[in-house]
Length: 90
Image (tube, rainbow, N blue to C red):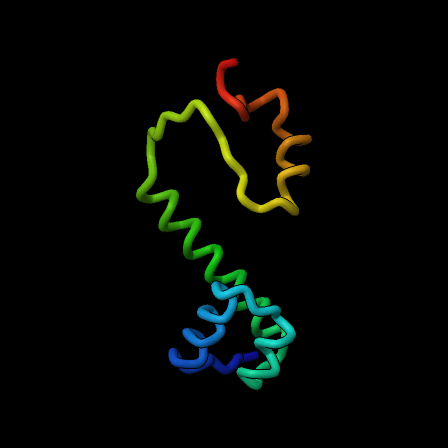
C-alpha cells in the first residue's frame, strides 16, 4: 500500500508548530491532517535527529547532567539515580 507524502511546506509547518509547543491535536486541525500523520512525522523527525546526533557526537566528557523537562525528570532520576552523577561531586 503506497502512502501519500506531505509536501515539504506542510511538513515544515507541522514540525515548526511542534517546536513551538503546539499540541498534536491543534496541529492536526490547523494543518488539516490526521493526528496520526502528526505523530508519524514527529517519530520520523526524532529518528532522523537521533541518527544525526549519533553520527556527529562522540566522546563528550561530562560530570553533571541536567534534565530540562520536568515531566520526565522523575523518570530519569528513578531510572538513572545510581548510574549517573546527576549533581556531580559533592
